[in-house]
Figure 1 (cartoon, helix red, strand yellow):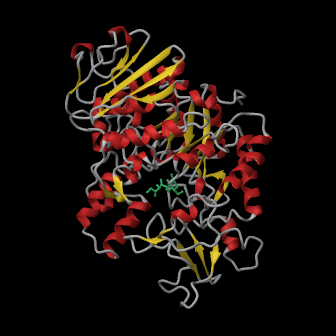
Figure 2 (cartoon, helix red, strand yellow):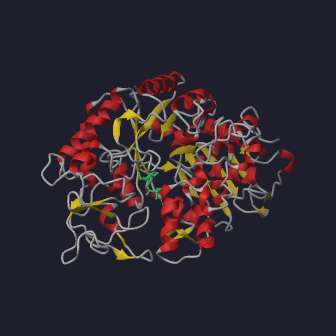
Figure 3 (cartoon, protein in one colour):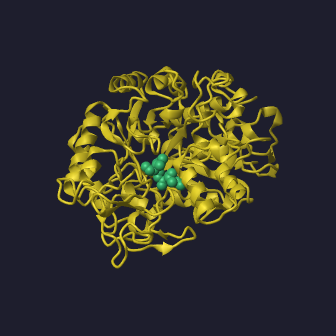
Length: 570
Ligand code: TEU
């Protein structure tokens, strides 16, 4: 238990997606004992906090984000004893453990829902969001849904339940019914469960789509989209009671305890102004939130419609978030997680400048103000996956989208596959690449999703002992955060005007300063760093022999500060 209230400001978090991390028992699926075996890989990177994606009991319709028992471990991942051991071993290495809190919805196999769907009078009848068919329609027939909202996993967000004779709302899959947070009993049950986990020794929560818990009670139709359904986001992503609910949670869970925990809310669609309210030091309810603006820059409307990404958009977006949350609020910083394609393939160059672009993007992210998150494999520069056909994909979001795009909208299958290859969540979910062996050291059995063929050269075994590897570079960046207060607390100013592909900023804390320059392109770029002595160069992803005083090489990143020289690959 920690009592320094803002310990999470200097922390770096590492996300483990248990299904894809390490398989200890040879069933092709990662598990808790697999994580235990590899904890030193995480600790040696300098990580402070491990975030564990869901390991709760689940039918695995959405890989564990559909929970049927919040207080049990799914046998595919191990047992509660294994989890207790993991908590102990994480703590023994001086790290903390946070878990996923998925309480916008449960699984349809959760006993709460089984009871709720039985009839309209049972004790849990009102625990989910049930509505009658649209007046004047035939219940259960197409277009009779209570409103036109699209599910984030394609199709209508409503499922007809013949037994109860009503529809239930599911913003995600039909096996993920939305809980009714308006009901105080639902909220109490959730707070009780959260306290149970904190009593067990965990150090906080990553809260799944936590800005979706309050819906506009009128559930109005949304604006029509190309999908043939309406966009309900404006009616559920920042509902009228979201602040009340989170304030109550803070009061009934976190404020009843002596420790200081990490709380991070995942919030699709959140604006910087809203995020500031959520994370305000005095009045806010959470330490930080995950926003989605920068990971929406390569799409137009929905995630499958691609749009050209530009460095100036990235600068404007992240710069605005830095400014808005500069005083009073706090940012979380991420390129990757289990829902996003790999950053080196997405915003970098995963062929010619693989090492350089992976490390340049890492430099930018880790030296912004906020708490950085590393997603498993990102510290090795893991890339997107050369998926060949629809049979290579596993993710429900990808499979549903493929089926509806082709069957309902008559899209061309090769175009749909092209979009999936770029944006599918499965890019992040192929097995962690430990070795160059056939199962990538992930599993001796056939893995639940194939390993990326590039594990033959891109793997942990070849990197962890090498300071000039991507892993070595991440270590150096994390070390910089832990040794230089300006990285944690310094204020942030974008350097402008700059050429289109240059991302440069300055951090200042008292008389300490730090300047970061990154060339996010395949071409060399002239820069003026004549004001800086060589002695001020703290970190660079090119060796000294290749460094030009007046120009940056492709994807070169330099960090200047007032301390001694540290060179990588040099
Ligand atoms: O994700 C919420 C979310 O809105 C997106 O990140 C989601 O992946 C979207 O479909 C992307 O197009 C969270 C979890 O991170 C995700 O894994 C779950 O599938 C989802 O909630 C439902 O629990």
